[in-house]
Image (cartoon, rainbow, N blue to C red; front, side, top):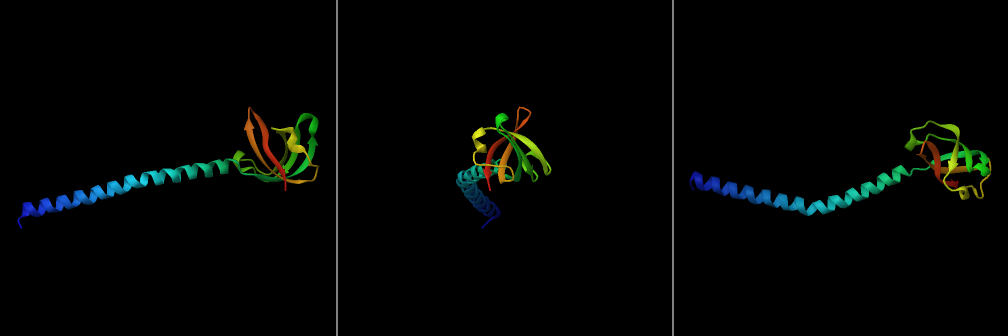
Length: 120
């Protein structure tokens, strides 16, 4: 076997191997994309992380509730007691001062809004 034939054989083998790798990568693209959608779902879950606290006051007339809470990670807030506006006043049903709760708060239009509130 001469050098030209050997070189051609090696190049063809490399091209075939590279082609198979490219084909394999192409077939995995769809799989990788499905993993991306799972990751997006996890990001959405992270954005909806619930924070624990205890109700310190209720102002049903103004749709507000005071909560002594742990750190609110999605808002980067340390533990403290503060008043939140309720997205839905019906969230207060069955709750009283002293109840342990979990909640999700968001900043909307410069206000802290409780989008989810439930008794522990």
